[in-house]
View 1 (cartoon, helix red, strand yellow):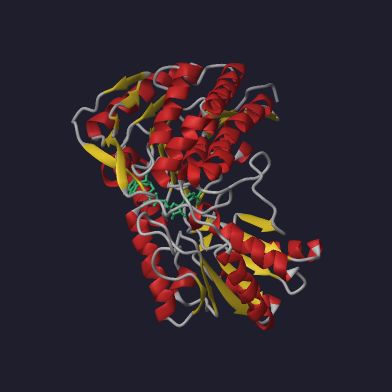
View 2 (view 1 turned 90 degrees about the vertical axis):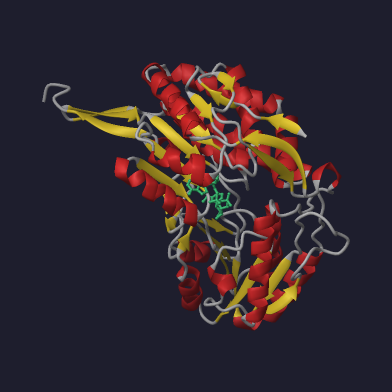
Length: 478
Ligand SMILES: NC(=O)c1ccc[n+]([C@@H]2O[C@H](COP(=O)([O-])OP(=O)(O)OC[C@H]3O[C@@H](n4cnc5c(N)ncnc54)[C@H](O)[C@@H]3O)[C@@H](O)[C@H]2O)c1
């Protein structure tokens, strides 16, 4: 058992004001392997005060200073990529191949992109006699989830540092250890004291108090829609800006002219990535009704080839466990609901995969003949469960795709790019991927329509969340 009981406040590792600990469990073994402290209001007050004190000087630093800081951070992550991958693998279950190939690099990429954008970013613009200045918003509060922990932290911290903000992070209490490594990296990179502060804790304790804190100017939250609403409610009385990156139930429209084999197999594999625990997972696959039987056969064959494993022993491509017991139970309940409500179970189903009697492992599961009113089509499952929904016409497919409270991502498959583009324009979602296109951290913008969130992360769109706009009137002679 390793202890990580301190918080990082004002450039130092400090003890919590009141000692209270939480075990961190490895989901592959169900064994606790580390302990963190759960913070209190007094810890949050100290961290917010440090961030407030650091803001006047950090907000005035040069673009070059902050760009170099971001590059040093990226280099620091690179140097400790192995430690970081191991921490992520142990705390949330991503096998080492995935932690190395995607979990760590996804985070690191945002620091490098932020440095590049920062050097070119126009913070001032003359419009007639008025100067428009973009200024850092102030002290930011960050709350992040466990599924892509470094990526979610970097999506917030990188643009906040770039724009000259100071911050307090409360990482997920389920996956807190990679955040503590990143705090060490920030320290070594020379991030000035008070610019970045970390307080561990749970949502109702630290998260809610940070959200309502009058010393925090802006909250950026990633997690469930349920908790996002609570953050926004807590933030409302102090009229702070709130950015929310929430859940999804993303449609994947396989158009009749798509290569069915490629589209269905690719969709299944993408659904199973990170054990289905991605907010933008293509969880509703829409297939033309007369092609559904063929799609079911392809999906079954593909899902049944998915290997299962954990840690360093898992073969490349293997799917790890679900990250925690609550989530495993939720996934099981929803699989049961799918069966009860009459969907066709194509493969997978309840319980652990064969050969596993321990750990929160789940079976790669595919349902077909799903109708969009079934619970499994409406609720975010956040596990390795794909729903295939038949459609009759293209209009029908687009209507079903948009018939959801979410609007994070969409996917369109077609052999005719122009056809795919036309359908993409009709999907009400913040990201639409055509024919398997991957994420574009440098040029894209990430965020949701409807109940998938408010605001955008990544690249220059991500900067804007952390900037206030000031018009200086009469700045130049008219
Ligand atoms: N849109 C995105 O960018 C994105 C990315 C990743 C995950 N997600 C979503 O995150 C969810 C899974 O993550 P999770 O289970 O960690 O979500 P969660 O909402 O339970 O927890 C996320 C974070 O919120 C905190 N929290 C919980 N209750 C809170 C409260 N009342 N006030 C303040 N903070 C609170 C938690 O401690 C944690 O740090 C999924 O719904 C997924 O879609 C969204």
